[in-house]
Amino acid sequence: MDIKANTIRQDLVKMLVEAGSGHSAGPLDLADIYTALYFGELLKYDPKNPDWDDRDRLVLSCGHTCPILYTTLIHAGILRQDELLTLRKMDTRLQGHPHHEQTYSEKGPIHPNTPGIENSGGPLAQGMSVGVGMALAGKMDGRSWRVYLIGSDGEMQEGQTWEAIMFAGNHKLDNLTYIIDRNNIQIDGYTEKVAPLEPLYDKLKAFNFHVLEINGNNMSEIIAAVKQSWEIKDKPTAILANTIPGYGVQFMAGDYTWHGKPPSKDQGEEALKELRTLAGKIKSEHE
Image (cartoon, rainbow, N blue to C red; front, side, top):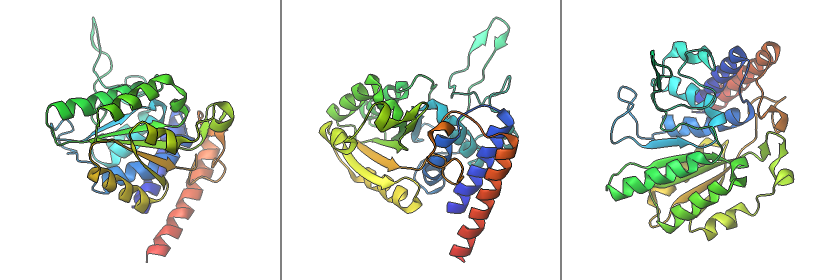
C-alpha cells in the first residue's frame, strides 16, 4: 500500500498544480492515513453505493485538507477520474472545502452533492461536533458502523474541539475513532510556538479517551492502531498520528509555509520527480 499512497500523492500534486490554489503540506502527510483506511480493509464502504446505510462514516474536520480526500475518493472509484483536475473550478464538485448537501437557487442546483463526503467543512473544529454527533446517533440507533473523525492539531486550539472531546468521552462513544494529524504546523507557524498543545496524550486521556500514539506515515502502525480502536469498549479512541508535513516531497517537508499554498508548475514537476524516485525505491524494497 506504500505504492498506492505514493501514487495518490502524485495525483494530489497534479491536482494542486492545476488548481493553482489549495493546501499542500497537510494533504501530503495524510496520504498514508487515507490509503490505509480506504485500501487497508479498515473503512467499510461501497464505491457503487456511496450512501449505503451500513457504511462507516468518515468525517473530515480540517476541511482545508480535502484535496487528499478527493484524490483518495477518485482512486477508490467513488469520484470520477476526470474530476482530478477540477479542484476549485467553477461548477465542480471538488470545492476548496468539502461540501456535502446540494444547494439550490431559483434557477436550480448550484453545488451538487459530492459522493463520499459526509459533512461540509470550513470553520475549523466544526466537523468535530458533526462526527461526535454521528457517533452518538449510531449508538442510539444500535448501528454497527463506525465514525472515523479526522482532525488537525492546529484546530485543537479551537474551543469547540474540546467541547466535542468532552462530550464524546462522557457518552463513552466507543464507535468513534478520532485520528489527529499531528504535523506540528499551522498557517502562520509551528503549533508549539503559536499556541502550545502539549501534553496532548495526557489531555485526551483525561477526557476519557483511549489514546494511541503512532507514526502517521507508517502504514503498518496506522492499520494496527485503527484495528485496536475496534476492540476498545466504553470510551472513544484517539490516535495521535505524528506526521511530517509535506511528506514525500523534500523541499516541502517540515516547512510550515507550505500549509496553505500549492506548488507552481515547476515545483510540481520537481515534486513529481521526487515521488517517482521514491516509488522506485519502495518497489525495489518489496521485490
